[in-house]
Image: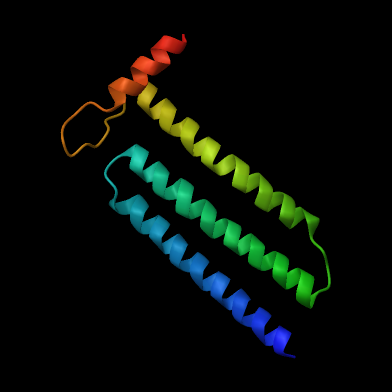
Amino acid sequence: MILNNILDIIIILLILISIVAMAATVIGFVRLPDELTKIHAAGVTGSFAVELILITGFIYFYRYLHVFEFKLLLAIAFLFLVAPVSAHMISISAIIYNKKVYSKNNKNEAKKVLDDIGKLN
């Protein structure tokens, strides 16, 4: 009986935390100035929120429906591995195609990355 109440509280807290993370993603995506910082907001907090929802679904299915959803574990692992890599590749392509990078001190911070990429070729 106490375990059911604790799991209910855990599920509710995970859903609330994921809602806050999704709201932070939307606010960050709207408010941040350039593509690279928007990718950061979407990549970090967005994937965190989706992973929390998947973990919540796994706990719910396992506890209340007595089903061990291996597909949810695979989705969590896949998202954990792929989301940072895809955000990194999108940001590198934005730098390569010379998108404007926001900088408070007016330095060309993307030039260093472009020089490193040029050395690889």
